[in-house]
Figure 1 (tube, rainbow, N blue to C red):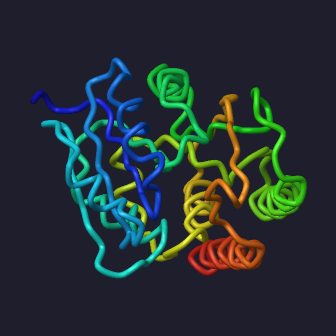
Figure 2 (figure 1 turned 180 degrees about the vertical axis):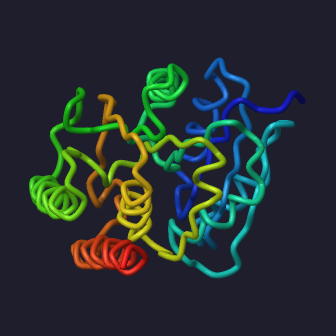
Length: 233
């Protein structure tokens, strides 16, 4: 296989109903790519389905204990070979056929990192309290880092592989989204947002983020900001 242009990191935890369809959708994307799937100790049969997936561009990592999204992404970093990296949740809330528009600002030299915003693109009308929570944490992030993001909690984030490999990811769960965002802005990277489609799920459909993750997210935003202040002192 040629050296991949794009590395797609797929953290998966109890996504038996979507993992196969999701990987099929990723494989349809007409880019040279590798797919790094991390099963985060699923208990619903997801691991068994991942074991059956075939393809020379598929890499598989298995956690024996559930550790969270951040830990899954950290496990994948040493296996990255692509020039660019995109995070892809194992559900079907986000659509792989939009990869090209996500990568474009970096390829054209306009950006170092791209966030795919759910709030400036077509989206399913989903949970109001999640929407409100996103607005609040985005406001906090914008105040802390003097920026104007609309959706830093988005799954879709694209990096040059050299950048994400250089960031020490220590947040194990959904705090990853806040830590990686803080690190990107602390390093003065050029960040673009592009609209993405979003087919949000509710809890009966498998949504996993909890209200307590709001406080975890704020904690990692502040912790990463204080780290920058300390380093600049």
